[in-house]
Image 1 (cartoon, each protein chain N blue to C red):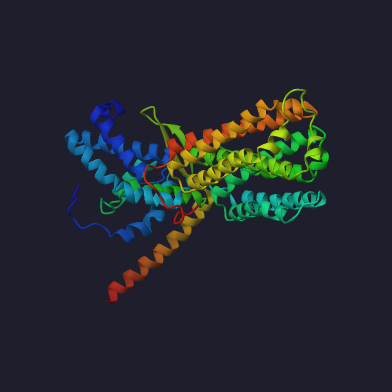
Image 2 (tube, rainbow over the protein chains, first blue to last red):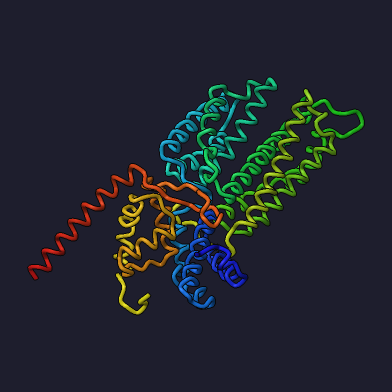
Length: 344
Length: 114
């Protein structure tokens, strides 16, 4: 009778764990696949032990029968993707089509509000992601999911708060449909690295928006800009600080944004060092929040609920980036792997 | 285990993997270790896979929609991933069978006339 308890001694555990570690370090093998392979190895050891083979020999034979971890990890890399299961083609294509409709609507609004060449540039990463999605690339799915979650939430809040002119209506339902198609429908659809990628991008998306806001305020004549806020009596207004210290505000934001981009690229290529720039980006985001808070938080905004949302999303951005950093550090393979030969 | 006897070549093992897995799963749902055991007994031990390599094969077939997986608690209380054939897999099996029959018949004829 072969049971797990027969082979549950420490030597077996050590050998199985060592094989599992070698597989994990050799490349991207998902946790569920590692479990599967680990179980398989236990079964072989138990089978060999039952046939009377000494333990040490059984362990060696089992590792031999399983095969070279590097070759297995490489094969896995060709089939599995780091960021989750590939979407069924119909879901990917419908989502891609709906997002393109949404982008067209968004661009229209942008141009109506006096958009320029920057409006087109802004949508470039999105178009690249949509192209990736059409090819069912998992990284594209996670990046788009982050953008859609952010756009949808922000758009819905803006709409609810009465800033309807900032949101073009056909875009909101489009974003909702696309989001529903990209969100995981099953437990195993998204992996931890996939979540890290989404969170890192979510942080970046919010911060880049903040950057554009500050950029716009700096470019704006002081008097006009000041009219946007209702400053407190004795405190310096947001506008005064930004106008007097544009380099600091700008510098911190630019450094954070660059770190964020480096971090996202590192998450995509599955380097665990992605954690460093992401942690830095998270810290700068938190610093910006701190600055805003010192300047009077949400009381500068009218109505104040805009301020709550403004500050809330900065905290969310810092938190998301930090979570991404932690996941990236904990889940990326120890050895650097090339991303490009792998079918994503 | 006759480890020193010449085994079937790597290419042939790889080429027959999908057909074998499909045929084994047609008899009933199964999991990795049991599939390997079946391959072993069906081939009289001649088809010796590097056993860890079975999983990329299974996952690729799952991605292609030929098979699907589900989890169940095994006899040892641990969760175990089982695989079952999907309708596309049944069709693929029929096609694999036709192709292997052609190859088999052609080789038979060639050897008889050689």
